[in-house]
Amino acid sequence: MHPEIAKRLIEKYVPDTKKVVFDPFMGSGGVLVEALLHGNNSIGVDVNPFAVLISRVKTLTIEAARLEKRFNEIITKSESDYAGKVRYDNSPKSDSLNLKFWYKPDVIKKLEILKHHIFNLDDSKPVIDFFKVCFSLTSRKASNQRNSIYKIYRMSKEQMDSFNPDVFAMFKEICKNNIQKMSDLHTSSKKAKAFPILGDSRNVSKAFSQVPKKIFDDGKVHLVVTSPPYGDHQTTVAYGQFSKHPGLWLELPPEKLFDVDSVGLGGKKKKEFQDLDSPLLDKTLKQVNKNDKELSKNKNPTRANDVYSFFYDLDKCLEQISLVLKPNQSHCCFVVANRTVRRIKIPTDQIIVELGKKHGLKYHDTIYRTIANKAMAVKNAPENIVDFVGETMTRESIVIWKY
Ligand SMILES: C[S@@+](CC[C@H](N)C(=O)[O-])C[C@H]1O[C@@H](n2cnc3c(N)ncnc32)[C@H](O)[C@@H]1O
Image 1: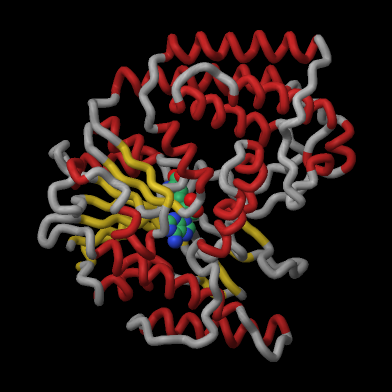
Image 2: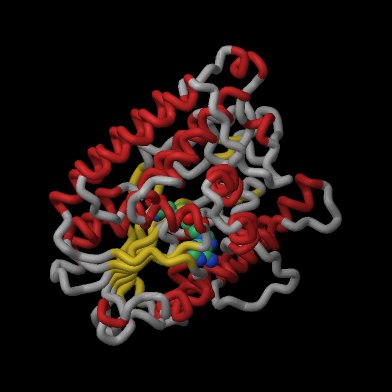
């Protein structure tokens, strides 16, 4: 989510800083950071433990001088170990990560050294977590992964031949940038608190049980600002795939990491369709099914099931979110992009308006924004058909409800 969108929605709907902001699909915590900067307490929920770690770190306020000191310590010790050919055998040992495929041998050595000095820092958990996140970004940048936002792929052989990443230099730059960001947040945040929670937004009350009662009087929030996944993780952005490598390096719970794509919205396929009270969804599913039969020549097409399963889960989230809103006071804002499945545009922005109605969400407005700065291809070929390109998410809709 573009930070400016979250900022403006917060300024408009919760000018009073006593009010609580909630992001049920928190990702890396951008909404929580904007709430902090505005002075509002906030809660974020995500099924991905790596997203939760990043959000926790992004919403910390640690003095830059303390981080600088520890950074110098990590780098000095790491460079000395590397020069002295010291090795630490602490890289991920999971069968599901083929280390040699994804990292060059020298990269593995240097990552192991950095990891050792970060994990053994004599400091508080927040400080160690800060460097863990810097380390995870380094491990991504130094890996043989290609830049892609949907699925992970390795570089081509030619790219690999000329790829000789300087791991320590990357780590230094990432730390320097993030210490600066931490310093900016430290000076501008206004004593509010952020609570990033590992949980599932199909069960918001369970996730909220981890939040200290004192931040909201009645367990309710004044504003929801969020961007849900575009569709099920398997056929859109594979959040779980992307967090598996850094998560394993950081020793996050593997069962939670491996589950992200199946626990994410639409991860469990529904065979039967129940009526979700959205005529537009029904119409769209029929169109997808028809095209799927024709295009895939499959007697049992499944793409409509993928789409339905996603909306089934999203509907559950809307219901759960509505239960923590304050009647006649709260607003709920979803930033969504409409995707294309089997050449059919899925009008997510309109379908969620129909779904939300039965949960008491009163449609207020939709604001459209052209996506100019997303690292996303403008066109894609969803069916791998030569000469056919479908539109990807080039326009965002900000759907706003009152409750
Ligand atoms: C589009 S991203 C959010 C991006 C975020 N606004 C940001 O700027 O970083 C959607 C997020 O929803 C999370 N997610 C998917 N299913 C979820 C669920 N059932 N409950 C909570 N989070 C979920 C994914 O892990 C992913 O981080």
